[in-house]
Length: 480
Image (tube, rainbow, N blue to C red):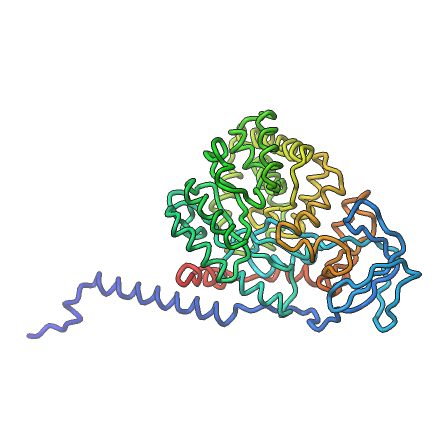
């Protein structure tokens, strides 16, 4: 009697084949969803005039600390063409927006965020953050940046880093470009810039020669590098390897230059290095305050955060990693975090007093914070650390504009600059908390009144679901 081939085929092979086919089908479905659903949408009117006159306003230009009273700002095609006293303005052909004696300053720039979804860019714009520097780039960020530039939906302008460069030993295989070979690193710098990434981000795991090669290649191409070098290099010959545009996190100074000691003499040496090599510091006090509160207040703090605005995929990852780590922190670790958090505020003020340029960055998207609200948190924490309000606002405007290579377009209220503005009820120099409730936000001449900002906040809670988030990242892992 003949036995069918099906019966003689091992059941384990059949089972394995079925699982493989199911996995391939699921993957195909996810990628199809990504291609089909990965598009922006908004209920806001996309057809907005970029030309008008904003009248009866008091203007903090950020050229200095002076507030210009009773001014008018003329905007044509998204650019400021005139800033004059009310009695001198001439623009009869344009529509008028009455500022009703409100205060106007440049739109905020958050130079360290992680935009995990389009909703995060909407959250930022709703809070008056007109530009963000995304510090962990993926191909979908280039897609979103293009959509924003073409006006397909509204959100903060995005400046996008390369995928993060790290060593093979220490890099995250799901999120970092891992490299040890200097020549491969140089080629990757060239490739990423050719693909459209705006700058290069480096991480502390990189070996010295690789780190040096990345900075040298970026310098040849005329692009900036931001991030943090290895702690070992901070103790030795960091200056020989070239300078970053911005050094991320005051905590990295504490961990690296200070070797986790509260040693102000070492901090003084670090400050001198920053000044001598024109390296700006992005303190990211907000994210350290988040982890400190998580470790000390546990779920009581977590329940106060806007978890509904975090994408489900990101929230799942955090619950298995960073949330879990800090929620389970021992009393000793929680107390240590409080001590470090207080010292980082002191350290940031010390760096500022010694002449180090501060650039505002919240690290929103790394824990519970969201771009926009966390940006304002960062400004308030800088002020609480003893930094004058004007200096904190400069970190979020003129200084941050330099960190995105747009200091001749953004960061000031000036003729020839982009009309990126925040209209506020009070003077932010005397009442910094007024930033939490802007009357109007203007980005590239497009005005969003309070009702528009409320709608953006609603849309900031309409984020990608599980499948789309996973498909988006699978697309990167499979196709780069």
